[in-house]
Image 1 (tube, helix red, strand yellow):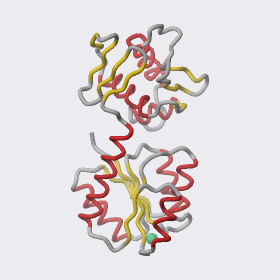
Image 2: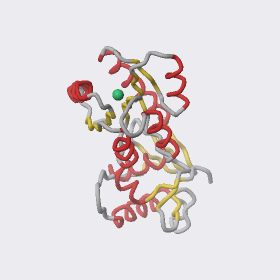
Image 3: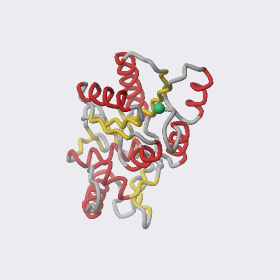
Amino acid sequence: MTRRILIIEDEPGLRLTLTDRLRAEGFDVSSEADGYRGFERAAGAGFDLIILDVMLPNLSGFEVCRRLRERGVSTPVFMLSARDQVVDKVAGLQFGADDYLAKPFEFSELLARVQALLRRVAAQSAPAVFRFGSVEVDFRRTEVLRDGQPVQLSAREFQLLRYMVEHRDETLARERLLREVWEYSGAAETRTLDVHVGSLRQKLEDNPRNPAHILTVRGVGYRFNAQQ
Ligand code: CA
């Protein structure tokens, strides 16, 4: 799966260099040059990681990070700063950043730390095996057992289940699920989502008509509950 990175950096040279070099490493890279536009973009689309400069026009990197966390966006944030000061590092982490690098830096160091951060986040959010009710999901082997018996899920059903498990106990709006799991932009077919949810309930819930895990949040979307 291609990882999506958003670079928010106002220095054109650095923005272009990072874009080119990260693309050469196989990432899907987007960029913004302005704090406010960067924030809007980061809040709206499903990026796997955000590279965020501190000194930006319109909205500082700290403020972008703080607002993203306030909105419940948990995408890992890698901050860049021109100033090599401990106070900046502490401030960055306080505002919800996950890692920090002072300019100037070697691209190889940035790449190594970006990859480490992506691995760390993936390991935290996706346990190898996750159990709920009588269901056991093995994310590494892409296998699902119910009462010890294999259950066949389509690739999309599995992706949807994984996303719900990774974001368990969060209310997941329909638009968000369609955007993150189907990668739709703009008007999307909410019926597609409802059909897949119905199918997952049939396959995984003891009582699909009165689900204990894949819950409906009326008027909004769904919420995954691992407890019985
Ligand atoms: Ca800057």
